[in-house]
Length: 273
Image 1: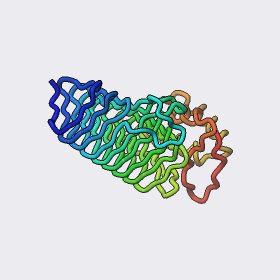
Image 2: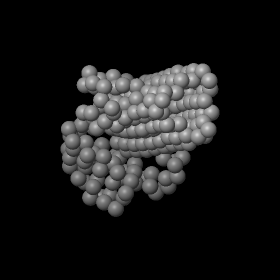
Image 3: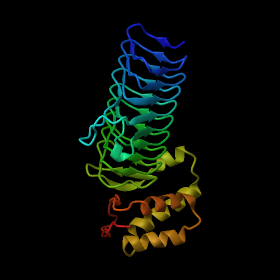
């Protein structure tokens, strides 16, 4: 039987696994599912149609599954789904989705959300993602696997952060950040690749060399951005890592792509794919 502190309030209808733990003064809504091994430490509010994955731990004063902060939301039964083995620290907020955005906010497995970070409605956060303290992502943002967002970084609504990317603290991202990119600045720009993260994840010297070559050709080669993208696609046609960057660019549609900071005074070309 689940371990539920007598001061907690668990509404009728909530699904709580037999080995889950709900600590002092937690509030769990009627449409919440708390899966095996999950723990709410104390003073945690879980509302809405929300799933807390296996072995996920949530710390005091987090508010999870609350309604979207959107004028388009009108009490529809949208959802929040959080994966397994996540750590959700003090004061974190996560909202359910909106009908207009597909109805689901999702968080992958093994993510780490430090204190006071925020996941807005209709966001999709991958696996092994880290949000440092006070990170804010607006509605409809997607963050790829293994990405790291530094303290107080912000991503504009509908923004995309590719897999294995890093955003430095205090950076504001309006454009999309390519996979493996490193972005920084109050109005952030790419300043290179996430070399430290890539090395930690076991990418080889050869892979890193090819990735750097493709990065330079894509952002600092001759011609328009479209021409450079086509050239990189030809020259690195057999490289699956570079292929992920190209696929990310091709999927941009009308989204602005974050461009690299200038090198040696070279002029920036048009950012449209």
